[in-house]
Length: 421
Image (cartoon, rainbow, N blue to C red; front, top):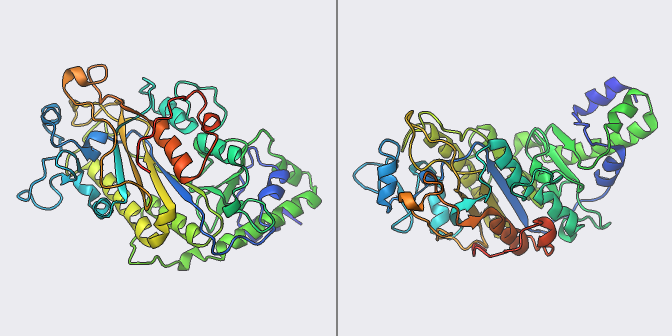
């Protein structure tokens, strides 16, 4: 099989770091995928850049919030300001940023559970380190080689509901809609990273070198042909869904943004019954040091796309949301006081959303620490009252059925449920 034909016929880009023919043979589609069986699915959405929790889930009942943010605070709920100009009240104390209006119906239906003052116990304000700790699940430990979702897959073994009749797990058990494998899925368990269904990129964990490309260049066509054929089968399986012709259901309208389209493809994968158990996508642009804005502006625009995309995903999935949990995260929150350039600097605790049919929604979870000076972390940030591992562990155990939490979150012994599931 000539190299030119290999590339042209598949339009397939293989990211070869850690990718070996053995991996391809182990995970490629050489069997019938599951049909109508619906297992549990976890969708993790990472807001990279540190989303401002105080303007996302607004403590409009806290007087100190308005004292700390005279220019960028979200006004208290008010019918007099007009649509989109004040906080959307949730419980008389907390509200949503007005750009999160598309998520309000999920709250009303009991599908949305915000968690406030949640995050990493690490004191770092480095984006790189904080993201690493959140994805590895080991705060302040830089030597952890794998991500917590990969450890979940490794400790669980074959997902019976995600497996083919032969007992092998689907190669699409864990899929990231990203340019490369995210830290959270790095490790020994196989996963797939794709930029899109119609042209996807595959990566594997492990320590193998780029054997496939090396073998291919040396002309070992017997090995390359077999591996390439398996990957073409995987390509055909995903393309059979014909992403260009995919029509969302129930009136779902996905934004044309990259994030919106990636959530659309996650919905498509779930409904295609390819054995998807873990899905991951991320979106940047949350580092609002300058001109953050309040009800309008930079953050509002970002939140609008985020909320519309998530709402479209839940609408498209319909009753499948009974078996789906969406978990949002960001590496840390932002400083409680606005800065001199109309923005916010790196902070400490943040906020998460947990969304799904099995979620105990209609309530803001977590313990609110307050925003008086003596209540702030280091006198400047929202204090942490919920360790992110408590949320992750509860989702892993209650939704996915994980049993070996000590292996998934080494060094974390509290295991105190948050109560969102």
